[in-house]
Image (tube, rainbow, N blue to C red; front, side, top):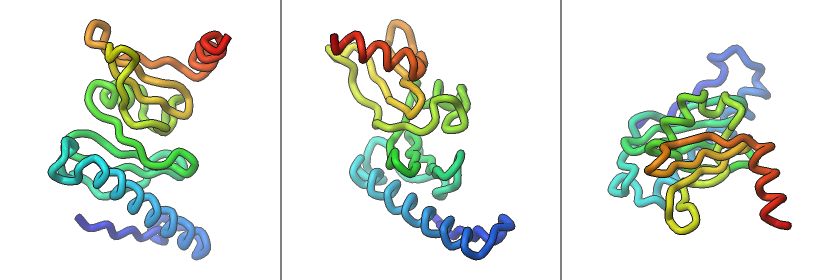
Length: 148
């Protein structure tokens, strides 16, 4: 894939263009490292079907045959796939209230489902109910009560 990025084509100052290019290079490297950690092209995510591209705010994403990896400053690179990815993208992806993922997809307790946490909440999936978003205030209250 061609990972060429030319920020000056977006009408930004030279200083901002350098910052964007550095951020893009960092995002590209961290997304690539996450992909390799997941097995690379031979792993379950398969090969890339897009270049690393800017997403909402200062974040980036790259699409793979089996899902997407998102990167944002402070959140790092995390994968989202399957029914959780479908729900996330239907809600607006990183442009939504959920923002960027802060975890990879993980198993729920007792292996009854899967989840991803995001800056603004979580998406939980269970085979009986499908994927559902739970937003930050509810997640925080649940964690508070669980800690009691």
